[in-house]
Length: 309
Image 1 (cartoon, rainbow, N blue to C red):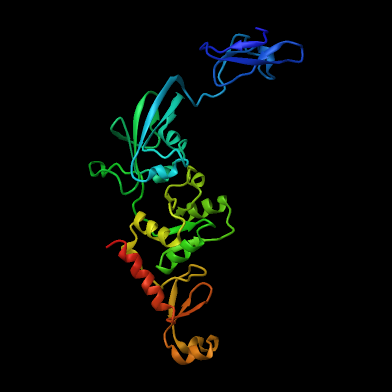
Image 2 (image 1 turned 90 degrees about the vertical axis):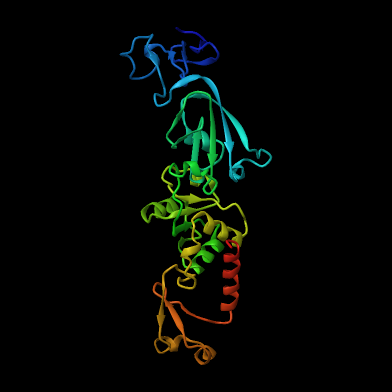
């Protein structure tokens, strides 16, 4: 048993051995089952020297096999630049969940609405243990024949956005949507707010979307805030839920009508003269009125609606 190398059971790999304190060599255990001397590990003296030891029992080693993934819609967006393709292959040597296979390619599970393995719909926990063809569809690109096998929630109206999406958060609030946003929030804070308040996560960090706790999320494809807004409206079917100018752009709280008399001491001289209708934030107290910027905001709203005509 005391050699400089131990040969792996399947005969394909040699694993270097470490030298023990007594000058003997002991095998370094890996994923494969190796025979290790009983006195080579502390607390294992009760095992006979020929006892096989597995270091991971949650995985099942199998003969190497290849899976082919076919990407539909815009899912190739998540592949590395220069590696964009509609299909790709992955070599595996152990039984693996289809979620792990997908995310090993850089595609978050939140972007997948339908998975077909050998033409049969499966969920994210489906185990792959042999060669297979895997077809992946994003939301909005799934074939109608599988309309009841969807993996994503089609609609959402409350969100939490990461620190890089401030303009998007503001635009969605302008349209009346509840968007939690803190430019200094860390990943764990975003996940906590998402989970506790049952919000959809908006982030450009695809690794953040891969956390198992994330049930609903979206990664904007564009870097332009106006285009991101249109993407989110389309992804979560928000067009019919727009209630513009009803939410505070600063703190996200709802706005309510307030009489001019109640807030007149807070108004600028010209505002007191030319405006009669006002709204006040129920959270931070910010005052809003239909100033000269309103026509510009209405034009933006019409431009957004035009993308869905």
